[in-house]
Length: 167
DNA sequence: TCAATGATTTTG
DNA sequence: AAAATCATTGAT
Image (cartoon, rainbow, N blue to C red; front, top):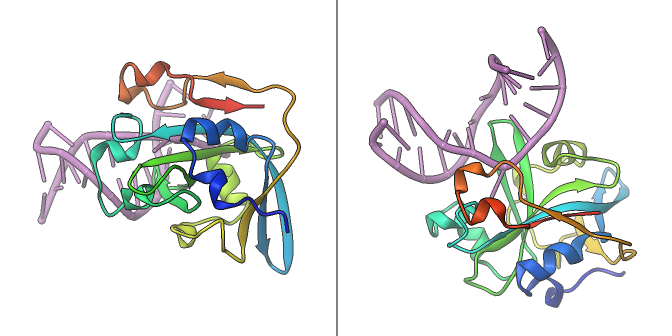
């Protein structure tokens, strides 16, 4: 198996996020292995980043982001959509990458619905889980960047950081 | 353009 | 204990 290892995730989120593009997300469900190419991500970086949930400090909800890279952070938004995030960086450094889109699926809420990802994946490790992991893929030709989506409340300078990466 | 919908956080 | 917030989507 070609599973990505711990050293991939423990780097700074701004290195990991663009590096996730083109990688393969594998899900084992209903006796089948489904795989999808990651095509759109956003980086959330530290307590200073007002768009990051960890800006409120360490709480029961954000605790996951303070873990060592490679675990999954799931939360519900707008009362109906599960958001799928990958924790990055070293222990006690709250960083995560929001997976916003896969090659056939655009939209962070749509992809979790399609892949049947819910709160039961919260805290699951991509390094050891039997049902979800990442594998190497082809390197994308070109990577685009833009400000992040839906975070106007965060204010400057966070609203204008080009921390959204897509193919 | 805006209603749906619920866990988390704040006291609006 | 009650109200506001919110990394969205899909239907009008």
